[in-house]
Image (cartoon, rainbow over all chains, first blue to last red):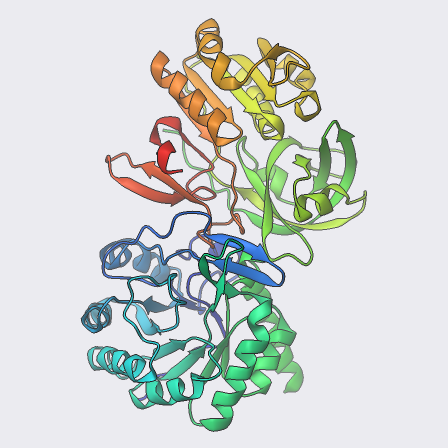
Length: 278
Length: 271
């Protein structure tokens, strides 16, 4: 049995809180049936970076949040059961400092009840993902996917989240797919800087055209690889732009910070749109 | 323990129904269906500004259960950047996306104790509805409003009904006593014989108030300025270093685990 590809609308990693903060704004069904990607989890708790963690720039945000998370134990004990009870399809984003940590995370999450799938964070901009395993080389990214895939049941999806780096993204997508990724997620925050030069990642509408180029190139080169688009998705038009160039799903991230009802609205709009087409 | 109420926030389109300049501030009255009804003192709203991804967190200054426009809420703005300037310029009838009420409200004492309320500038806004709730409980309320100068002082006239005494402090001495909160708070606390101190404003005001409370053996609750980009707990952009009940250092979100927290729980040096 092959794993399903989530979508068409998903909550992007790191932009849905623990789920509880999003639920009041998620529409009449709450999180039920929604593909919810958690913030990236590490084996040990991470406090996250010192402030300021985010700054507004024209067309988006620069962030250096630093992957704050309570660690796997706490997540399994408290946040996961809540998400499962809320009816969300929980895709756990994982980040590790070593190949072994990724494998450990995958193994333990494979046994946790209610985990619908994994998203492997392979695209955190440097500094933001300080201390993470170096996966800039497609070969290393694929090794991580293979290690995760070995520990995680084949009937559940493993998504590879890549950075929207036009020069390497096709190669990265091919390697990760060959290593067992069900789909690739493109992209992540683009390496950028705070006004004082400190390293961060740019997200929001500004990165939309960059991610779109990556999505289009990957789909053209690798039509058999499902691509999930992430970058500047905020309404029906931006979502349909990605779907039109071959994306099979979209993730909503930064737009949720501006309007927490974005996912509910987009789900309803896409459903209405499909009905019109039919 | 009080029974927890379900007060989930809503995201609605609000409308400006009144706008008034007071000194350096702009007072806006807005409709926001569902927000005033759910409000408790210490809550805030997050407002979306066109063309900006980030949102603006604003203290709720007052709610009216009914008016010609239905329930309304008031916010106090000091135009400091592009977003607050845009908001301050909105005319009556302008539509504004609003999320709220957000954040943890002030905890109210069970008994009729003496309370000192300390607020600086526009951030004194949430102390006014708090003073009314405290008075309803029979608490003796002493209010301190401070500001760098008179133009940035929130008028305490409206609060006089609810409080026993009002002290006005300005750094330049343009009105009231000259000085900063840190210079006067110990004496004010002693004079009010306060059991609880509530403070809102910049970090140094909160820190001074919490420290004075500690010295006097009083409880303190501080309302932090939420610099979050979202206000809803999603972005993790407003880290607040605290010490947990278990004595363990943690970093929580000011917007969701705050903005009101116990003053003795904040790790001020790490802020």
